[in-house]
Length: 151
Image 1 (cartoon, helix red, strand yellow):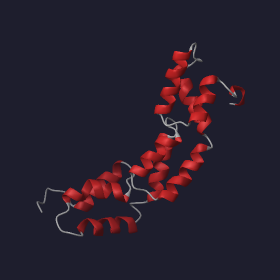
Image 2 (cartoon, one colour):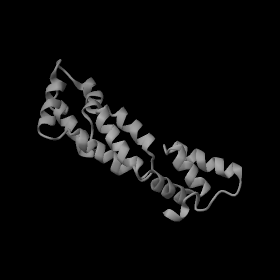
Image 3 (tube, one colour):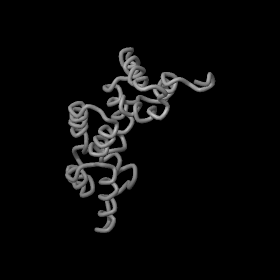
Image 4 (cartoon, helix red, strand yellow):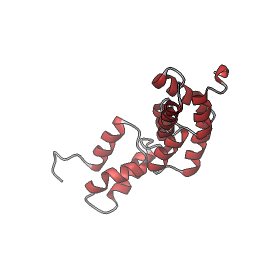
């Protein structure tokens, strides 16, 4: 290995310094730099044993960063793409669904400020919230103004 080329461990630590990564993400990003078979697995095992790679922290980080702008569906998809444990993802998404209506309402207010004046505007608002991953019931309640006094 060239002395100026970072080691696998160095590359992994650099990635982890920027943000939390799941083991699967690190494997995907570092596989091309593995020089000997099994080297990447050893490095990731060591980092995981030392607490540098922690799946629960990845979930908490994603939820913290994304929950203010995205619905539970989009966050679930993002967590699944990171190769995280299905049960942990489901638990995190279940907690998010409890605040889905409030979060959808906040995103809607920031973008649109006022209720839709016609069917086309209402459809546009609904598509916007759907693209952010909010559930159909939350979208309907936000765009039609149902339960608006509860917030």
